[in-house]
Length: 118
View 1 (spheres, rainbow, N blue to C red):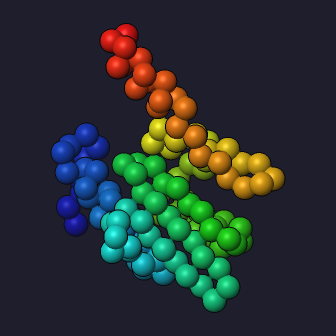
View 2 (view 1 turned 180 degrees about the horizontal axis):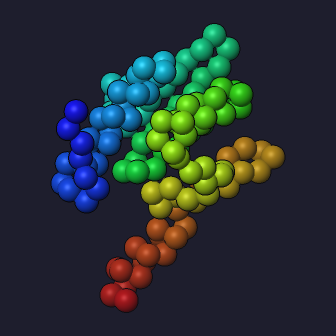
């Protein structure tokens, strides 16, 4: 087996291919609309896993199944759980008793400053 080295141009591609292949073996299906989205549907639960560069967002409606996936990923890839999602791709994610709220306030401020020539 040929191994890639961190920092080489193909390293991230090979890591993604290894991760994608592993996710398929543990029951995920790759989305046809977005190759970075993997979905796992069980009888009474749903899990979505999104890959962005070297970050993974994992969500679903069954904490037991989410923890099971995290344990499998950790056993194979030695992942680090950063806890609940707070920021992603310029979005601020906030949870309240009403639900999840998304905000792009920081992005809007940056765009405003760029338009003013700051």
